[in-house]
Image (tube, rainbow, N blue to C red; front, side, top):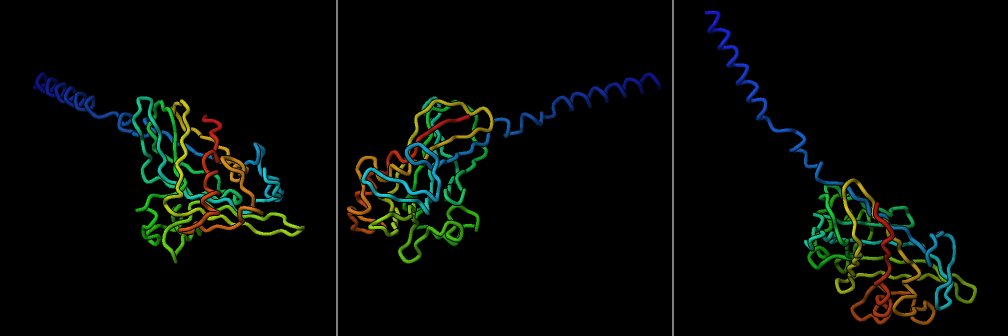
Length: 253
């Protein structure tokens, strides 16, 4: 009986070890080993130098101006893989308020790999722009309670706010540009080879001088100091021409 008991015990142990070997490796099921977290940081500059919010700056039209509000609603964050496939980060939005220090956005679960470019849109498509804002949680980038960039009376969001003061005949006068309407959304594309192999950070400069000196020279005194993106709006039609090139890609590491 002892002989058969020993044989039986051996078979049980072999069976136990075989089952144990077939158990999945927890590391192989951990999706985080195949993804990383990325941060996009935006640094406000004027002609390449960091902004001092209390300072006045002179643009190409000889306007002396400062910046009081610089705010953005962003969407459609897309990474182009090395093979040309596009990866759109799911449900990815950003609300930035640069003077308040809200200058970064973080996205998790980004597939590791080699990429050729990154792009994002300042603004929203028509469906998102006219979606119900009350459905957003308080801390969501599209929550009006957070960003104060939703026009309840007209529907839709303000995509970009630029406000401040400029000097005219010894007085400080206010300027206000609220870029809205789907036709004024702008996509910004940055071609640069990089590899996401760990948590990393993209750094961009926001060239506030280029709002006034880029494709066209825009003068607050001569071209206008106020626009809320009206249906007929020659001030915004000229101002919006300078939106391309507002952002510069600086580094990824």
